[in-house]
Image (cartoon, rainbow, N blue to C red; front, side, top):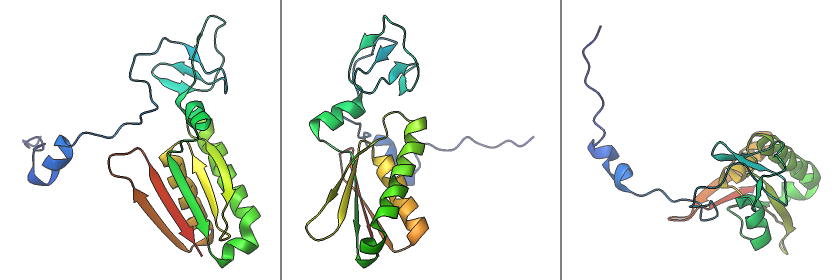
Length: 167
């Protein structure tokens, strides 16, 4: 049995992270929601403190989930820009891969959704998402499948991620 000290939570390297306030998603409700609550648009259920898929009782409260509210407001939390010469010849398969990543993530996390694909004037494609983690997962999946260059830009004090992939 070793006699070790617990880690120092206020070590110089970690002190700044402990004091800095986390940035929270402004679309997540600050009030305690009634359980169960069902989203009238996507039918997701708020139960046990999170949004998930499932059946809701007939007397469930009705309120838009944060993902549906983002879609209505056209306010993405994640952006993935796809560009480069390689994109032109492989666009359909790359977009199919992103849709597959979204389906996989959405099955486990009801608030992670692809909002839209927008073709830009320069030939690039902009994919928008309701969740920054989904933008990251989609960008990483495209990178693993096709290589190229992948960049992440986190917005300071915002719940937002911009991902850029090019090849």
